[in-house]
Structure formats: structure tokens, C-alpha cells
Length: 140
Image (tube, rainbow, N blue to C red):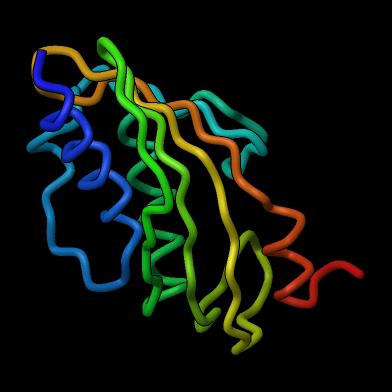
């Protein structure tokens, strides 16, 4: 198991959220992929299949077309990679059922990816939705 290769896969995974990403997720994500989001972002579910997660990704990229991904820290052990990240983006499209605000926001999170057979099979994601919604002006 190559821990550096696993870290690169996790960086590639997070890079999909960037507005300028042209990477093909199916090249390095398992067909049986499960994304466990906390807080949940899709129809009240926090266990998203690959297809459902791709729709969430598409919605995010439409809402934040200039999103930038910054990797703050990565730790790899066995088949897992933990990555602390920060996203920057301007809300130019509908997001979580709300109209665009035009505001530039920053939010952080942690993703733990499980990698088997050189593909990501599962992700556990915990991110600061409160900060994001506050910066968007949706909550006080």
C-alpha cells in the first residue's frame, strides 16, 4: 500500500469540488462508493451513493463556480486518508434551495477516505455548514 498514492487520490477527490476541475471521478472512485455527509446536504440523507453524490457535486459547482480547494493537512494510515480542507467560493447559483447571494465565503471541513484497490470506496465528511450559511447571510 502506497500511502503517498492514497494521499494523492484524496487530494484528487477534493479537487473535484473546485470550479475549474475537469477530472473524471469515475476514474478513481469505486462504483460502490458511499459518501457519509455530516451535516447532510441531500434530501435528508447522509449516506450518498456515487450517483447521488455526483448530483450534489454538480449542484455545488453550479452554486460556487469559482470554488477553490485548499489542503491544510493530510494524514494517511493503512487504507485511510484524513484530509483537513478549506473551500473558498462565490455563491453565484442556487444552493440548498436558496437563491444566489453573490457573497464570497470560506468554510472548512475534514474528509476521511477509505481506499481499496486504488479507488476510493467510502468517504466520511464533516464540514462547517453553520459558518458557510452564516457567511452566505442565510442565518444570523
